[in-house]
Length: 197
Image (cartoon, rainbow, N blue to C red; front, top):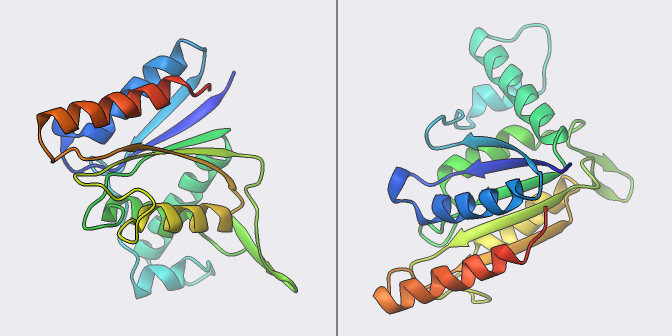
């Protein structure tokens, strides 16, 4: 039975198209017996990385209460990620990139010596053997274009921690009129239906 960690990051709540598509995928995979864990990074946000937190992420004996709290949360998020086989990310495009809420999660799980390490030949990810599926929604048409900073960034950062099997599902043109919206969502759902847990 596949264990799937689902990350939602839209700030739009019930109006979120990325969350709706994630729900479609979850229903599809639950029928295949997948076990789902959902973390909504907008409804339950994690702290923004700052100097105090960055220093505390290195650990030590003299951490402030805030540093210890965030370090404990980082440990929890990493343990959660490690305990799942597949990571599903809802990544709506906000100003050509991922939501702040998702970036904050990444900043807390990308930790030297824990999810990646440096070697004589360069960095090495420590979370190998996992798979990621990214569902990305966009108001316009950005796939494979210079304006799409989501795909190269997520490929890079996930690969950096060892997750190199990354699939992207696109829902584009969602603000370009009713017909384009319907077509974009249909294409995304068709792509999601082709995925197995």
